[in-house]
Image (cartoon, rainbow, N blue to C red; front, side, top):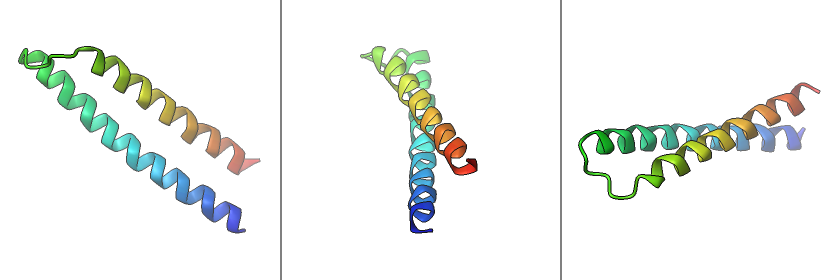
Length: 66
């Protein structure tokens, strides 16, 4: 059972990081619309980070159900 607790803890951490990344993406898009964003590649990097986090969360859910 301790492994399951670790898995739930890591899922919660991933979800927290996902929320932070989504907020950051929203801010970057807002800055871009105001033409205040200097490095527009940050948007692409943040989107990829969000995709990776969603993938990890989904994989952990699948492993948890097995």
